[in-house]
Image (cartoon, rainbow, N blue to C red; front, side, top):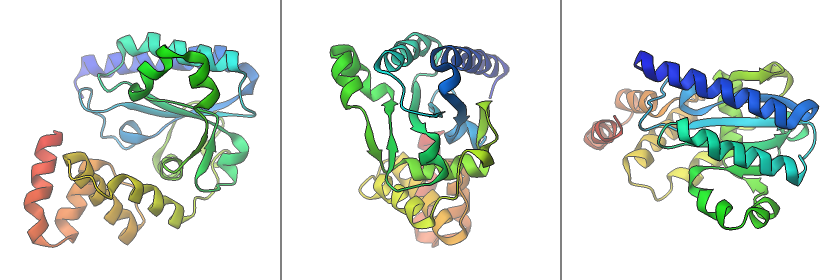
Length: 225
């Protein structure tokens, strides 16, 4: 990543960490980066900034509103794909039940919904998320602590079948470049038990999957890059 983009990312992460600590106070256990940043595959123009906020207990509606408004403000200096995060409790991180419960979630895809009705968004954007098991597995393997307790004190073992199911939900009917690269990652985890970035997963696939698939994989890499 170019030096100026590294600097912009560093500034963004510092601002995020300070703002989240101020909003959540003693309820905050930690902030943990996963996704492309943790897997050393971040690209400013094609990657989002993925992180988990681990709390002792579900934040108040006021705290949730502050988190969301802070996110919108900092989105102005974020990569084009924006910020994506979930709030999860320490108990649900230590003892994984798939799909994992979450207290609040945000991604750029939900911006308009939040702006249209903040109260409704806060009341209904919680439940269980099938993606979280895979995110937890990435954190356990290579996550980055932006703030808080050591990863091993926060995230318990994640059942392999839960991670596999998380992957399957994202690769079933997706023939886009992202979908193809995610299927490569899925196969790498299924066969070797390793969590890889999209590009690393594709490189793994070129070595381990049948050659008749290579043209599609190489095309997906080119489109992604």
